[in-house]
Length: 300
Image 1 (cartoon, rainbow, N blue to C red):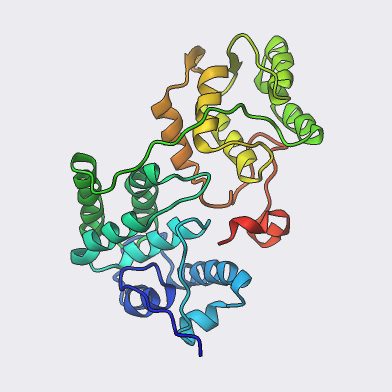
Image 2: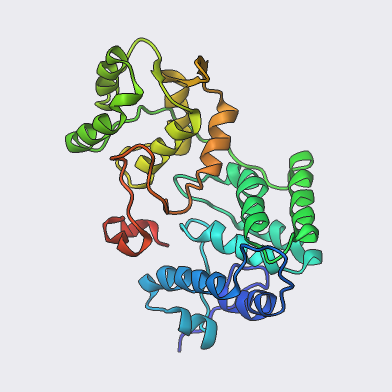
């Protein structure tokens, strides 16, 4: 007889978190945030659990009502979303221990290395809690940010440096045509011709100027990476942008900085599927309910 798996109270195990923190938190919330609607919030969480549990033969009913255990792996697309929801209602006193445990267990994936855990908690998780909580959630947010600062000053986790520089290449010729068509108005004629070479894997001798804001360029690159239409890790993409691209800000051409790219990549929320159309037409958008085309291998 197979032995039932046991979990730590600090695991990102959905049935426990739902019964202990999230469900009571929604039901007992004092709502001061006009954007928080309990029914909609709960429906969105249920949809996430349905989608994550699908590959394991589980539905939200199995997990949230029948109490079937469901562990959210740190390598999955759902990790930071569920982590944010849990922290939104978690006991503030226990938050440091909870984050200590999650940080030590965090393995990440090809897009999100362990080295970026602190940045995601400081920016993405905090922003999610700030925007979506029933109230201002000051006590929890302060506990989270205090934990981040503690780790930045006195790290508890040694992260090995492992990075090999690779060039970026678009998946196939059809995608090259689509990307070039979508970005044509954002490059000069000369730079547009060089962009075609660059997307084909050929190195070019100078930087190309994107005639738009930095956030729009980074969002386009991240969406293409999300759908695996260009290859490369976050570090690969960052180095590629630093080497080959600059952008226009209020009529002034500026170089990208590593900090700017890191910040924009975090705020583009690359752990989650893009949920709104791109301003650059042609950089594809697939609504969450039509995600059949997405590679199943990323759903852990």
